[in-house]
Length: 432
Length: 140
Image 1 (cartoon, rainbow over the protein chains, first blue to last red):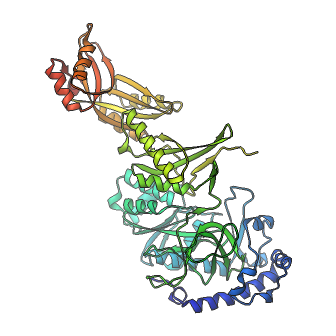
Image 2 (cartoon, rainbow over the protein chains, first blue to last red):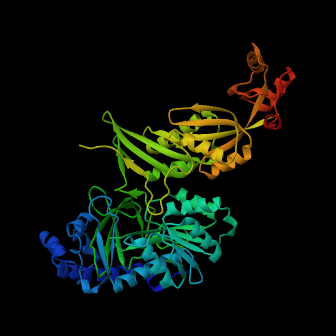
Image 3 (tube, each protein chain N blue to C red):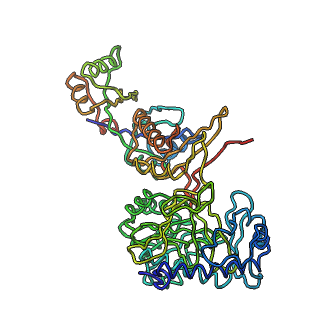
């Protein structure tokens, strides 16, 4: 089902006209209401009148996470606090948390976006949906919740914390949809098998986001649970989950373009690139009131396709994420994304997608150890077999990332299961 | 022909062996024989125990990677040259020995051995006049 045909199936001309008009208003709004933006524009000699439509977009300066940190906590808000009805904040693993504020209309717009995403996954008002993202400052829980409620589905606000209880309710209530991180869904799937209730679940589809994951991981989740797993993209600076999702054809993630204007730029020159070329995703929030952002650099790497989709939607689609430029590790000069390891392990079979990369520096040389959990049925009691398996995994990973790696087999369930964003990297290098 | 050996994969972590023996004790499992193979990163604990199925389930329940493996328990007399008799048969017929360890109690004397092509090796051992213990004999 298409949740909002008027908006999701617009012709390209209509969409561009709508985006252009909204961009002009956006620029005017931030110029007059956000001092930080006014100064930024003045610094490059821009006035609101210089932006007359989409064609002038590239004249505008980018916004980065540093801008949000510099103006912590409320410096980028475009409305007085009396109009802000909710605050969310990012995890802030590096440096200060970034804070975002929503007006009532922002919350409505967000709910609309998530409802569109849930419909893309083939779920509707008859469905019972568990929201198993953390509820709190993290946007996942409440964002998913409001969207599922807006749709009219029956929402079970599980949050995270008790996987067995979640599964018991999944069985007892006949839950048909779930929203959570992909790594948590993998943990839920494993626990479903442990509890021996695989034939009692009625799950049809899932929407998983908040961390990069691979096509192989999707196949594995689909196969284990008999579902269709969908990728829901978002980031708190822009809104939260629901900026884009793949429809049932899984040919890229549809961006809600009437609210979010996407661009792909070259990672070095920051010039726009053509459809199909990978670069950094940049988003302008066309209608947001609380904290509108112009040309926000997401650090997420993808490509874009503006051709209409066979599902009927005409909104532009971004490719599955190959990684965040933030997640990229440089080991001995080679760029490595954790998702490459995940893909290699799943490709090989016999291992679970649970892994931990430990990067260290010994005598000025970077070392990479990957701890891998091996499926019970692939275990042998012969050391020789285990050593062969270790070498095989090392070989497969080496092929994938082009870097020598040391694999350590660990006991099943030895690696910590995350209910939120999974930790896949420990970097012990001390850089001076 | 075969007896069930309990094999447990163990990371080299402090207290891991103690946790395993505690599970066995709490489930009233007697260990008849054991050997520990170790590498720098993990070890493989191999045991002949009084109730292998129960032991395996109990260990798995407690988060261990435990499995049952078919091995041979070859009865040997307590005299010079007995082990050589066994290795000679296996060598002459071209079987590889993956590992072996001893089992001895008041009334049992055996070598636990895992070879390549276990069923054929068992036949060869019996044809040469040596006896194989069964699970029931070990447990009695």
